[in-house]
Figure 1 (cartoon, helix red, strand yellow):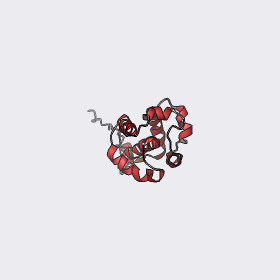
Figure 2: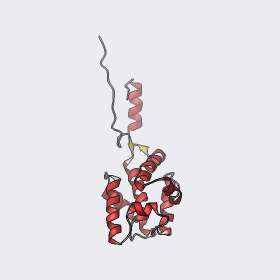
Figure 3: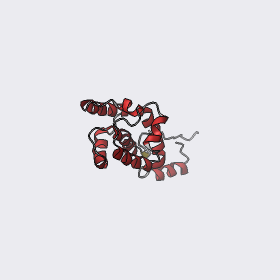
Length: 155
């Protein structure tokens, strides 16, 4: 007689830890310097509506939306602005963005931009860094993992 075997497979997209909220906030702060007509004092206020509107959307789609808004203002697309030194960036807004970036363990925007060939690459890499610093286990996860370990159930 062989005892039945059991194992648990987790879908890591937000199951074990709250990754959606911090990932969306990083996405917002990556795009915030390029948002047209948003003053520095409104950036924090605009964050929650942005996150709610874009939850679950790919960053590429968020870039497209910002590009459309920039085009209406006669501004270059996000990637062009990202690759250009200081193009149409509001210094007061950059200070707010840098303060937010520091909460996620990210370097200042001026130091980060030269490291990446595109904003998309920067967003992907920096999201991993930020999640390593601030993602937290969802309620009940630690107890569940401890119980599975105690029961000898691999995961």
